[in-house]
Length: 197
Image (cartoon, rainbow, N blue to C red):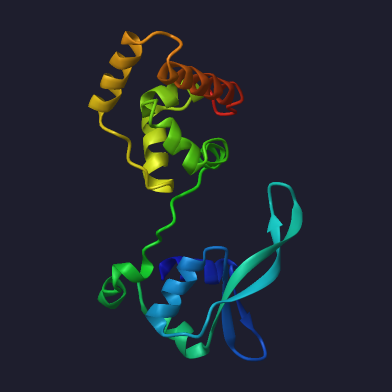
């Protein structure tokens, strides 16, 4: 609610002069839905709005979600101060935002390593090897897999056994061919990595 109040008073919220009603605009549907559920409001609607970008000094039309408020609700929200026990007792599941934070690096990873492709790669390559080949930190890749795709890698023993089997086989076996093809593909992805340090 504090996020709403800050936004309301610095211009992200508006008050209609003729109706004494307010509106919150956001591209985050879950945020507005949480407010709607807590205050028992009407539906969240979609609007096109002109949004100013100060870094480029331009306006662009964006699709935003809108939640309309009446004067009574605005007063009720304003009464929920920073130390209000009522504000703190709002059920956490109503304001929990389930979507993972999509950084530029995660968006790039999602583009070059789609979920099904990554699942296939994980049958032959460990997360640390994938990270090394595409130029991404091992922990960054693990968090990406778990938070964005809800994927859990196989245990270390699986990859150790697989590595041993590859070394014991000839270079022309199906396993080694598949491993080498996928390795080459990951190297090519890594060469185009804009985040490589």
